[in-house]
Length: 261
Image 1 (cartoon, rainbow, N blue to C red):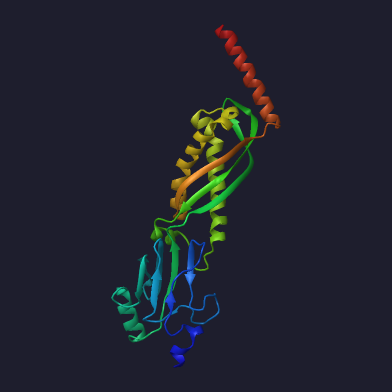
Image 2 (image 1 turned 120 degrees about the vertical axis):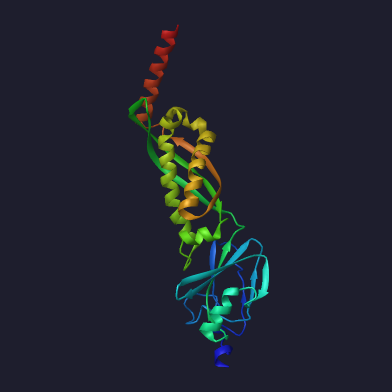
């Protein structure tokens, strides 16, 4: 009775499910809290697994040849048994003599939710390739929306243990800042958009950044970028570089018009 009777050590039969409202990856524990039990990964054979539509449950087993994983996509509501977890037949049979509990970590991955990150990149210098002496400060602000469409690819690139959504947001936000700055800095030379006209070309610049950013986020973090919305591309019109560039381009335009006339 001691093995099966103490709920804090795994429970008689658990209902394994995720009731979190906002999450990307969430680890299930019998007690509901981390580090509250020496057997927080003890899964009772015969417990029920409930995976809602738009979720995926990942069972991670530690074996001699490395971790093994089972992926169960919702909707799913069944008792845990070897019929729906074929790998358990070997694990339970060899490791536990057909008895429970068996050791497994269970993670729920949110496949339906849209995660949004707001970014604000402070002023950085952008140069017009025709006038490299004048640095024009530009700031970029907006929102990125992403989700997980390839759970197996996602967990290969990210640690699941103690995985927090806020930590992932911070991690991905640094990469977003780097990528957006890199693309915007090169837009005048790569796409022939004058620096002084960039504020009026927000939609075009948005598409250019999104085209570059989407594959980077997939390759580096395993997430699917659903949308990029640059809300503001602000030029510092008080900067000396802006004033000088505006002056020299105005003079060049005047000379060109005079020559044509």
